[in-house]
Amino acid sequence: MPERIDADVCVVGAGYAGLAAALGLHQGGKSVVVLEARPRVGGRIWTEHLSDGSAVDRGGAWLAPRHEAMLGLARDFGVSTYKTWVDGAHLLVDEGRMLRYRGLIPKISPLAVATIALAQARLDWTSKRVPLDAPWTARRARVWDSRSVASWLERSGIRTAIARDLFDMAVRGLFTGSLDETSYLHLLFLVRAHGSINRLFSIKGGAQENMMEGGAGLIATRIADSLGDAVRLAQPVGSITQHKDHVEVTATDVIVSARHAVVCVPPVLALEIAFDPILPPDRRALYTSAIAGPESKTLVVYDEPFWRTEGFSGQSAEPGSAAEVTLDASPASGKPGVIASFTFGHVAERVATLDEGERRRAVLDALTARFGACAASPVDFIETAWWTEPWTRGCSMAHFPPGVLTRYGPLLRQPFGRVHWAGTETSTRSHGAIDGAVLSGQRAAAEILGRT
Image 1 (tube, rainbow, N blue to C red):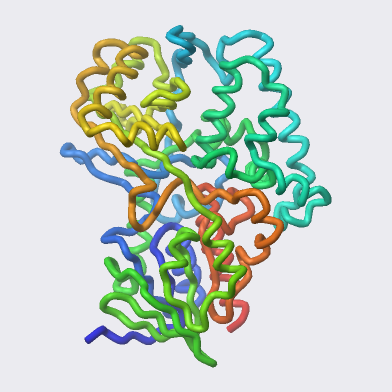
Image 2 (spheres, rainbow, N blue to C red; image 1 turned 180 degrees about the vertical axis):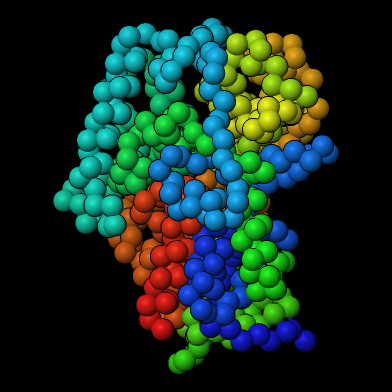
């Protein structure tokens, strides 16, 4: 027989949104139960430990300087941050040519650089006309939402092939889905939520500036430890039934009766929960449309970060390759050396069709061409295809196809009876980032505390 538990609030999902919600409610004097389908906490943040004890992040790993909610949790739970390694030359591979550069702009033609800079300036300027808390209310929201990012890119003025490929890859890296299937309004909203497109793309001063000692999952583990037995793992939720004065949440081995529920799963996974009363058609349409795209992250581990002594930062790009973007993801101590390699969207899907050995060879061949023979012999090789993870279904966040935000956007944060919603997709500031997940959980907790 399933165990029956009474609580003030049941939180569905123990990613950073769910944990932040549970922590806020607990601190507000409410009893909570957190039900997580995975056998671990953290959600799209997944820290693994190597044989030497070093922590590496298979999922989300980076924080920007303005990610105050997440940085606040780091301070509260005694987790230090450190700067991503950026010293040395970055690399861009263009039709077999290896281009070295420093700073943000690669050494491509002046025309290519100028057109990218102009397109980014226009994006930043236009995004300032998008209301942060309700982008669907912008004066031109319907026009922008009717267009795809791909159609905007066609008219962006970016002329040369390498410039187009770079910008396409960078934006695919933000959304991971097809740019034909991503709303231009969603891109504008994302830029607005982070302050500028450069902050999204950048390491120094940007979204990839800071990493966490012990891995990005350490804070999640410490929050869960502080909540004790309230966190139940390996408990996928099958149904949420609303009654007049409470909800009943049923998982594999647990039934929770609570005054409120907070659902903190990726939008598409909400459709796998049986709601009574059932979700109305507009909500189902929203969650059906809000799909995260294919993204793979491969951690290539070496005894030491040899590229640093060779004068390289570890940052490289080759659109369309098996290692489209790489970053130095080594621990603060500098050992072992870790290169994080990413592929996005249709490239991730294409690479995934190769068998395991072919994928490994393709990634290592790319790294060897860029960083030298030492790259051919890693001590560990850890692949994560996030869209194949059953309790994630894509990364880094769901993207909204044209027409969805203006039609269904207000439902993202609107409670459904006694059911509240959190997750980085529902956040305004830091939308799509770990910090956005934390902010969304804090917002959901405040909603409930304000009603009771």
